[in-house]
Length: 464
Image (tube, rainbow, N blue to C red):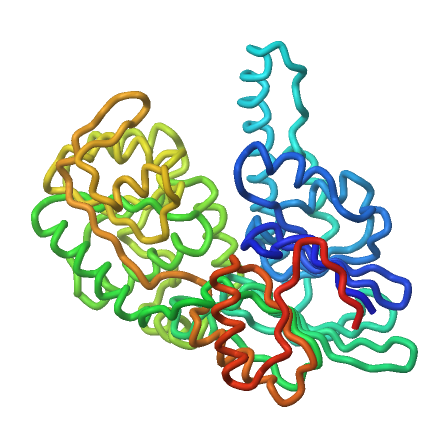
């Protein structure tokens, strides 16, 4: 048996781990590499294996850095099934279609620049239609249900607690009379997060491929983030302002909606209109509603007591049309507007910020990490003015930053995750982490006498 680390090695993006077992090839995730525009196109276009030679794909969850290159894989000849939990199959289909639209838009943007320099145009990595073609290849599987993706491999999904439908993957492998158990963590979630069940930890595994995103730090209690967000909403509404929240369409938006529902149901904040203004978020939320089996006990109990769905309540409106979105900026009463993108670079959120940044009653609430050189980062840094659509706007509104909402496990849970298999594991492979974070985690595990930890290079091949 051989593992080939073709993505998310020495980085946190583009997960692709190719297993060679009994003469067959099994691909764990097929994510897009996301980085500098100049690097991403060629890297995503050219696989380090022949897609036609892959026999099966197992998908841990729907995020684009794990699922986003599936249309390109099939476009280049992959014809097998894509195994995923039922929620991931539905959410993944939605997200890669959205990614297809983005690929077409990005190619159009690049080609305008190439035309000015007399260069030939490029094709999009894949199109929305290519993504549509993938939808029929998904094979939805229940958590803990046994399936056999390739001969000699018995697989099961276990709750990862990261986003709706996310899973860790257990593989019981028999090759040449030898039996081993391999565990692929996918992205590990956190305890006590809104909506989702807690991650299930591995036991008695021989080999483990494990994320290390936050190997250098632990997170604060999610309840602290809830209290901070509640206080921001309360004080903004009480002074007659709007709360404007840039948020990622899948996961973060639904968590915020659930929290606002709970706050208003309990009377902790005034009942004001809440608007989710993102087409992808609206569609993704419907997928969430379709899969209540993924919700935790607290959410199920809240639904029962409140007598309405967790992600819908009488103060909430899902905005679909551009006209509805524009109309929000004509209204002056207190409200909460959640829109993508999460770093305030594109989409409807940019218009909402432009229309509300000069009112001191308002608050722009930053709820996730912001990359350097984005408008979200400039707002998080409280810069006195920002450039929007080529014009300079003075920031008179308040800015609040809420930490502790990451969907990834922090250092403390990663340690617990790895040390739980200390007595059985022969090798742990740390992936999905930058070098500083992964090596910090590796050092701490070594100190706890777990020495068999490896941080593989990109495209490294390891025989078990």
